[in-house]
Amino acid sequence: MSDLFWLDEGTRSGRPLVLLHGGFLDHRMWDDQIPFLSSEHRVIAPDARGHGQSPNATAPFRHTDDLAALLRHLGLGPAVLVGVSMGASLAVDTALEHPELVDGVIISGAGTSEPYFTDPWTTGLWGTWQSAMAAGDVAAAVEAFTAFGAGPHRALDDLDPQVVDRLRAMTWSTMSKHTADEPDWSVPLPDTWNRAAALTVPVRAINGALDSPDHIGMAERLTKSVADGGSMSLPDSAHYPNMEEPAAFNEALTTFLRAM
Picture 1: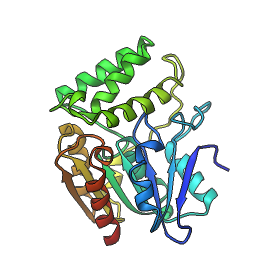
Picture 2 (picture 1 turned 60 degrees about the horizontal axis):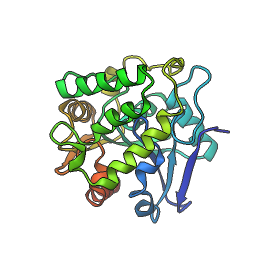
Picture 3 (picture 1 turned 180 degrees about the vertical axis):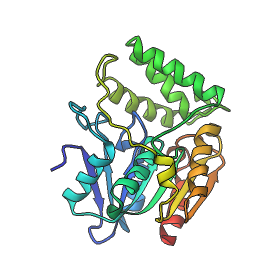
Picture 4 (picture 1 turned 90 degrees about the vertical axis):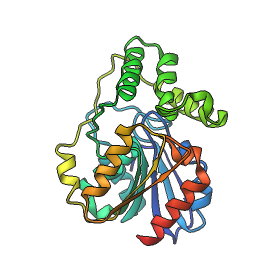
């Protein structure tokens, strides 16, 4: 049995849909999607290991194996995996490592689990966050990481305050569970970009147009490299379009799901 925390909502006869949150966030980032999707789908929203209400790692692990164990425990699959940021990478990893459990992938703001960053805004913010974490300054680390939600063209004050509060609360909940000197037990997957190009399941992206060019670029690269890919952009959001533009995101998600 999986030791992860998860929500299991919606109709048991509906198509299974798995919502995968971003790094340092948790299942609550999907609060605007779960009620909307539950009328037609069985919706699973887990907290990844070390995030939210799921336990921290104490031995080597892979997020994709955790997710596969959960889906097998629930007797689900194949399912459509929907992920934002880290959750997008997890969706792709699972399509690579456990293809029998996946019949579609919808991502936002990421590609595979081997990200790369070259944009000065992105690399600068990563540096600020990492320095705060190394110093044990959780408050500063939370603030730096939350700034990804604004993207390079805005400040956090430009976002809906409720969205910012939700991001801060989730990030604090997860970051405060960790210390700067704890080991990183996560095991990376090799050669994911080359392997992902061979995916045959549908891969779609819903990107925030105000996100960093690195994040948008990785998602676009992935959807253009696969056999069945496609993408769309939401104009008034950055790294978390499902939280900033929930109605538009839900409409785009529904459109993609019905075509899969």
